[in-house]
Length: 75
Image 1 (tube, rainbow, N blue to C red):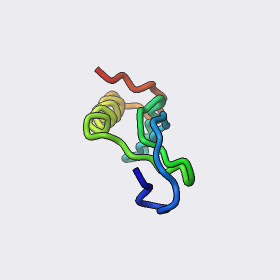
Image 2 (image 1 turned 30 degrees about the vertical axis):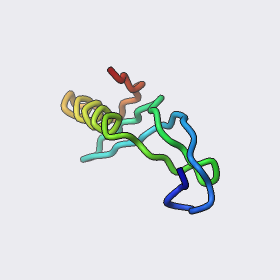
Image 3 (image 1 turned 45 degrees about the horizontal axis):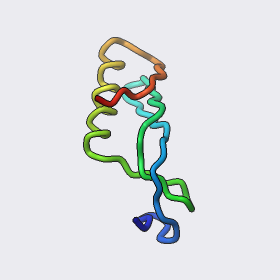
Image 4 (image 1 turned 120 degrees about the vertical axis):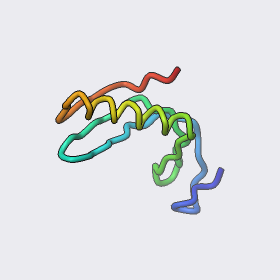
């Protein structure tokens, strides 16, 4: 698909690292499947992937993490 941000590149399947930050906690989630723009690097996530990321971030914050680095586990 054409990148909605730069309007020049197209997207390809790849992986990215997503950073979530809330109330002083930072969660880095690695190995996230995404459609990544070949020009600007902007990425697009599916609904299922977004749900998994949000659950992973919430779990880390609920257990009191200040900084956590995890690999995404997609069921």
